[in-house]
Length: 392
Image (cartoon, rainbow, N blue to C red; front, side, top):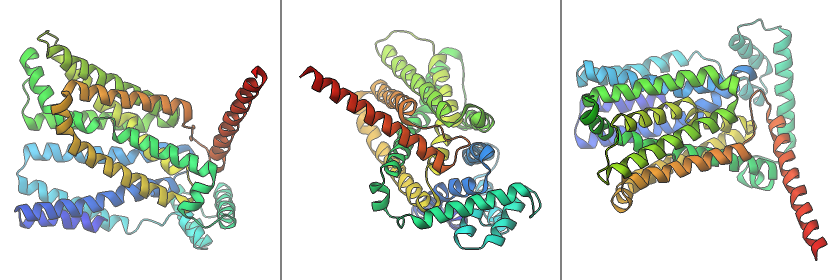
């Protein structure tokens, strides 16, 4: 995946013709798609339970740091210099990452217990005979034995098992909620919002400066996420940031609707709403679904499910991009933002009602929670049926 990114930027170094730009974007897209699948899995499998969320959130933090670096470099340097920087970063990372260990989970699955112990000792910065290390290895071996006793990993096995299928539905729904919240539309419309704000508050920023402001807000949100995700837990951070994103979308929709009727409203209001949306998305709505998805499944299902949810998210991004202009012409920008606010509020409700808290929990503990919830729902239905029968 990293070589593909290097190839992508190398193509643009030698040609800026349309075919080269399209080819470069396609190669880069393949590499990024792989990264969005593999990186959350790798981080989950090397992290101890107490830092799993914080380490998982660094994925989005690194992404937003990269965006900000490119925005600033684009404002200060020539286009050619930016291309060289973007080519060098994946090349340096690839050379450095060659020396990183394979995940202990994967090594245990391959029967390489000694290598798994050595890798875990290096990752934990401890000695190979550490007592806690031995307990972790034994736990990984027990989990692998449980996996071997289960049916071979397949979509059929996921769907047949009610608890695993429920986890799949939760992972798909939180990822879809994140991707369809309208965040991409806010980024596309940021220039227009800044332009309208400049008319009333004398905030005149060049397009490059506008993207830098957006990048700084994204970066601040990502830093907050990495600092608080282990304190707040996944569930309530996701619910809170989805609610904040929904409120900012609703504010943007109402502002555009009211001003379209020639009623004056302050120009700083949509800028504030836009900044809140970008911050809230980076502070939880964007990273937490990746963390939850990686924590909901055992090793045998984790890669399959993450690949599927990432593919669905990529498809939803494509459909949003294609549908944006027709929706804009059909409904107007105000209704588009209000529609996205409804998606965010539905995501908040779904998270509160059905998403389990996965912080510091093993897959078995998470599935026990899902089974308890399912039993409670079943008991509730039985009680309701009994009441109906008694009325008859």
